Length: 286
Length: 321
Image 1 (tube, rainbow over the protein chains, first blue to last red):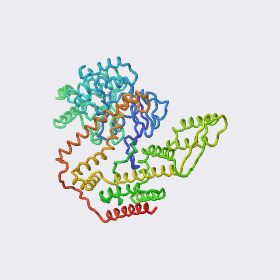
Image 2: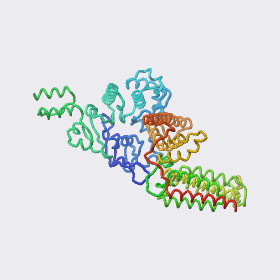
Image 3: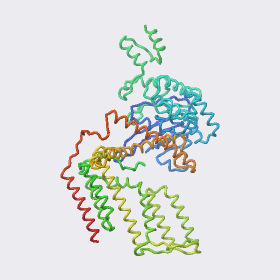
């Protein structure tokens, strides 16, 4: 197991003593290879807090998180023997807002900032930058531009490129597709799928888009009021009746299928993943 | 960083919350002036007691204020030390030779090592450090066997000690009083109060509304910007920036990686705020009606009169003495 949560609780400190609980009793295993995980839940349900535990940016108030064999507990930052920094190279975390990380004069310098911090040589880092900038759907000439003159979507891609250049084993993205146009969103998801399939790495994505969950994920986690309430495949999740209880909605294709079943009084054996499959099912029934 | 509570309003119901912001600001001004007029250490201790009573009646836990004072503790200790060492008038309180010998040099190193390894487990690190420094100083003056390496004199004068404690208490009082004001007054009320108080400045062509607005926006954004700074630190930490260690060159890079996004976000925030204000047709200095109209109660007059009595009697006391 690459990352293992054991009875993790996390409280945000506050001035009154009624601490705000962001994570409650989380138990979770994430393997190093081959998982495409989506993390969903309402705003304020603890998703971002959960992923920030995955590279030891936050430490649990009680319980522990084991990341690549290193046990992280409440006071692990004070223990000089535990080096947290290497973990952050292994588990690359892309924050939701690119404004929080872009600071260099050029896109190139910003992308190589991460790798250089982890001891990668400058030439090697530049070579990586040239590669990843194309992966995220921008051309090489962007490398010489200032990150502050880019559009919101372009900034987002540059910030993702900055983490990809670190070559993490596990890639964690906090709402990577928010603020992108449909084409850019699909291109990025294609990229994540490639990373997942070709390099066999684990990708974890926070999203509110059920279509992404249904189309790409091999596993889905649902957070609800600081608890992890569901851990399974998308098919299991969307079969369940209690979707409404967690304030989620259904992917478009399932919604359409359900409507067809109700309105036309049909009965399908399986749930389709795309329009072609639905078409096949229709043909079978009619 | 989470300990800074200046500029944060915390809801409550005590009389401090019911007071008119104008009277609170005026009372704060009067009491601050009073704190500077006091010439006698015992008097300012009375005033400190008075401030504690205000906290008690106002239902503000002292612990909360103490937590807010923590960040300025280092500043206070610095001023204290310098005052003690450099004011050289009045009666001599303590005159002792500090002698560094081969023996106590060894013990000193052991104590410092002990401090270095133990400090992880001690909760109040600052207090621990002060105790260790006091222990070392006592040893240097009392226990001096062996060959003398070097020797110097430590002399503490009465005025130095008094002056130092004086400034400490004064600063604590001032910070506590201003914290009480911001803890118990909503930013909007504070803004309105300041505006009304600064109104006379309009006569000399200074726009009081704008000044009040600037002050209240600044106060309002302290916690927001702290929160942003925290998020930026996390984002950069996940790109391998280790804010806790590194050489000087790395440190500079770390600070830049924090400051640049900080500036960008501040500009963006102020832009957003300006747009939001404009969208609500805000025009600085224009006559406006308010939802909440300030009302001056009998309590407010009583508080102001009380504060004035304190001020006047302080001045009179100063002349008499």
